[in-house]
Image (cartoon, rainbow, N blue to C red; front, side):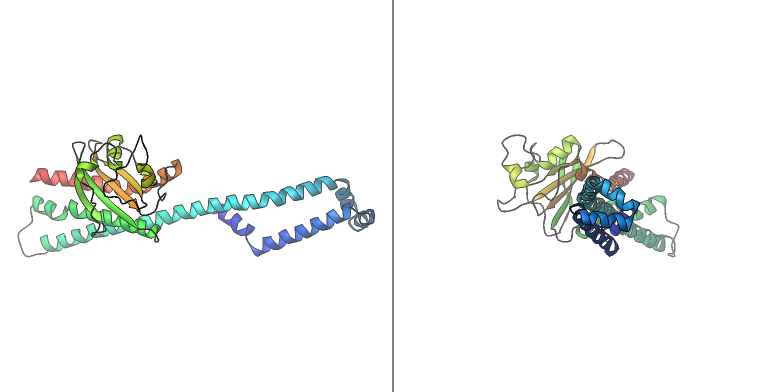
Length: 302
């Protein structure tokens, strides 16, 4: 990356040596400008270059100080850009690795189906039997949620997350489809979650991602609240994200991905952060929508 190359050069020992040399020369020039004897010596040793430096001494000092002041700002700016590029690369790599686990599970099931249905000493399998054998949407949905959990654990190994998938039917919250960790089933009653002030209801009716940066602060709001207390304890500091998954055919909400981070302000409600969450979650939501369609087809086939 060009930016990373420039940033590495500005932080290299070679550049630090050059910077030190320039600072030393600049100090000597300032000393010369204050002494007539040193000015004459500078002209004698450097000739026309010395005369030019003495004639424009003010500009020489100004430009050197300006460059010295700008360099730290430039390095800081480059560092921020390089870190963002590295983070994007890290996101992409982790995403590829975790999504691949979902594909691998489906590949294994297809391979077993070939072994059981084709290689077995039995009559040729019917289309219905093949479809029912290879199409296991509930299992795939679970694999997708496990991949999502793995993705967040790899990206943020020092944080604790709860991830759950809520089913939606006829624009109403139905029930939890799957949740992780297995020992952390959401405790808030489904009827309480149907309250219009809940985060998940806001995501359902707005059909957009909803972020609660700090649940305790949100609970203290008098108006426009987007979080209900439910089973949240007063000493628990959580950050909440709810992301609606839409049907491929109807564009209606069919699932809501809920992610809780046990750290206030982990999720940020900025445009940049929202774009990164949506980019990441879109890869999982599209696969969830596909499995939902397969589940509908399988139900109709029966």
